[in-house]
Length: 158
Image 1 (cartoon, helix red, strand yellow):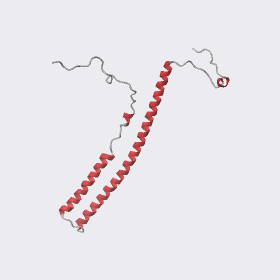
Image 2 (tube, one colour):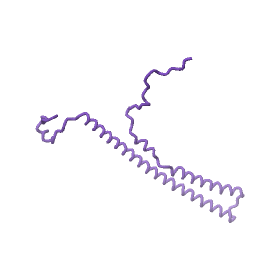
Image 3 (cartoon, helix red, strand yellow):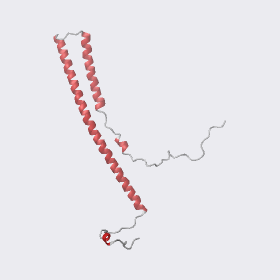
Image 4 (tube, helix red, strand yellow):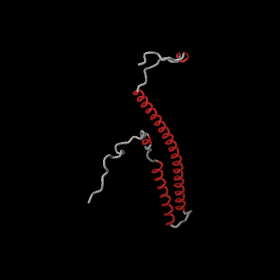
């Protein structure tokens, strides 16, 4: 071990508080594991921050689309009710099949918009971010990746 002080210039000697024990291979391994944990922590924080920002932007976009779709559905419902009342009052005259087709098509369109809102604007939360948090492979081979040893199997002899 180091029992004696290392010889340092006088201006550096006052900056050095203590000299510890020599660095061993185990210390390097520990330092490497600590550094790897810090790198993984930074990577996870970066991924989570980006995911959070993406989710916030996605939520804001969906809220905007939902607002406009609800406004469109309300306008269509009001228009169809006004047309229906005017037809009942005799102010608008259509053949019965035309009126029925018009009213049914508007209600089908409203139903389709509701389906769009439910299917696309309220999708389940994305959990693909969890795939990104897995530790990256560093060229290590698993047992299934390694080539098999021994003679290759030959075809059946006749």
